Amino acid sequence: MEAYLELALNVAGFAVGLCIGVMSAIGYRNTASPTLLRLSMAFISISVGFLAVWVGYALELLPSGPGGPGWWLETLGVGVQTLGYFFIAFSHGLKSFFPKSRYLRGVGAFPLFLVSTVQLNHILRSVSFILLVYAAIETILSYVESRNRGAVSVAAGLAMLALGEFLGWYSAVFPESLLYPVSLVIKIAGLVALFLPVSRIPFRRIRFDPGPAG
Amino acid sequence: MAVYRTRVRLIGEIMSYAEVGASVSDMARRAGASYYRVSSLLRTLACQGLVERAGETYRISPRGRDFLREYQTFRQYSESIGMTV
Image 1 (cartoon, rainbow over the protein chains, first blue to last red):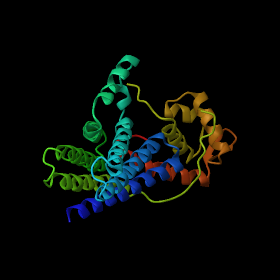
Image 2: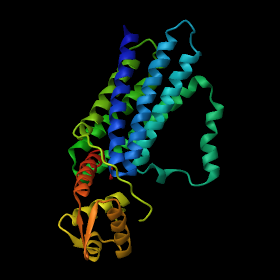
Image 3: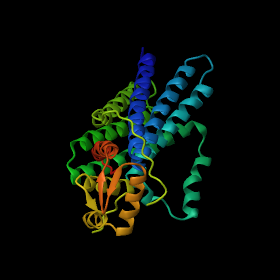
Image 4: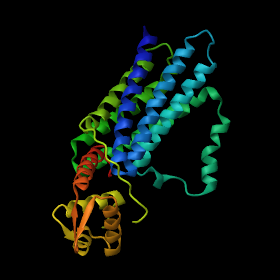
């Protein structure tokens, strides 16, 4: 029963992420805004990540056992989701915090070669957690400036996604508990909260080519 | 304090000024942008059929109104996510 619940939640996450991603892509198509391009990349990545985790989990139910292709697909899905969260954080100006020198970049990437593949999933979840907390704080700060109610919903959504990631990572400590399904439920609730401001956008299609000048 | 403004956002501002019709210098003054930059953007917008030129005045076209409506919708959407278009 728990397995079916997890599969259903991953499918729901895929659908919600895809919906927001496509809406942002339509916004990019109509306005040529780079922000909307980053948002579409973020949510399509999150959607694909949920799909990969879902398929990976389904494969893990087969007799191949842990360490098989299902496990790798799940890790890949978590990685793609992390990439999506990165694009959200990047849109809030994360690039200004990036290490400038090549030396620091090398040091930052080095630990990835030291950890075993079993820990990779947990590292990705912790990176996702940090990116989501950052994005939630930035969104709250933007609400303080703009007083736009939608920003509260989005900040709550990002915070719930962060909590979901944390619980998903922490579930490794208690593998037989309900922590992982609860983390998925919280993540889906977060995606729904993100979806609320998007749901007000009407669909329309206009071609706008920015041209070479400017 | 100077506020960073994206190209798309400046286009949106110019288009809103063109709703009632305005000259390049008038738009540049109201937008706080250089004459050259606004003039260059208006040429691009005119090539796309989003604004129409009548003498010294630029006025928004029907297609431009569609774009402006979309821009305003997605600007509101972006701001609700805590970002700028």
